[in-house]
Length: 370
Ligand SMILES: Cc1ncc(COP(=O)(O)O)c(C=O)c1O
Image 1 (cartoon, helix red, strand yellow):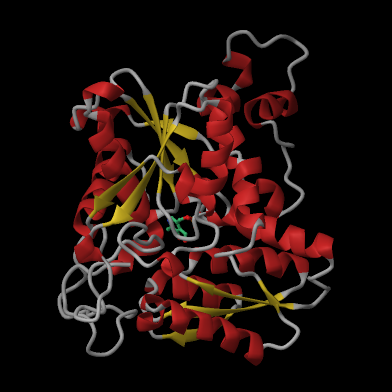
Image 2: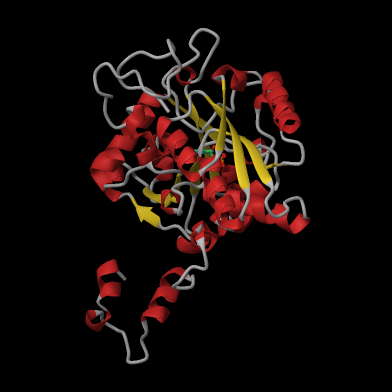
């Protein structure tokens, strides 16, 4: 049923006299027509057919986008923010008025801050100084406290461990969300994202493409789907070599929110990542991810961020392979592209604008990452 039919039920075919708007809304989403609060609006995101994008790429497979940008705070992280808060409330780790602290690249912070606002908690985030300006402004708007930390800390597992300890020491009694290791993160995707994809494809999904930030989406949804269909292939899109910070290039054009999983030290992998579930890793450079994000905007009218672009690029390559003829590939579209407008993902910044999120002397002019 289309939105138009829903909005004008009198003209919709097949609706009998017992019809109420409530029954239609329920049958569409399985959700109550009036959400009890922001948390009731999380999840149950649509799967969207990307036929024009697929055709333009010569796809032999059907490509479906899992529209995580339609979560109320605009990203897949709404799911785990609520999952983490709920688990901490149930275990008694989170008490009324508590402070929630985490190290985040933005989306988890935004979701935690918004849910916390609705439940009377305060939030404080240690944020890489390469985080998209739009994300930082959003966090500030919601009222989160922000502690900027150098991007270089994220290169070094020991420095990251020290930052974690510092966050604990500086905030005695706070609840540390620890999205990288908290088991509530993959558990949420196992309980929601995976089953939704299975239900909405009627078990027809053959390949799942996701990126790895914490590893929660791929581990949770991937595990659920593989339990239903052992032949399902889990494919991770990782940033190419030129798109990750190095000692030489600390601020390259990047794919915000996702990390490399191949050719890295084991201690650099997040605790929630489950490599044993992954069948293939495809490297995508930031420029290719941005181009795919622009392509799906122009072909399909969907505004998604660069990590979705990376997943789409990987999916397009998979869909061209003869062995994927007639299969169904589901791509995680992790967040909204609105978060990257000022980062130059959809077009160059105005001349002379080095970007509000670029530390002094770190960036040049023209399109930047994040
Ligand atoms: C924009 C974006 N895409 C993808 C991911 C990866 O998701 P996960 O943390 O579940 O691996 C993240 C997580 O940080 C993200 O922020």
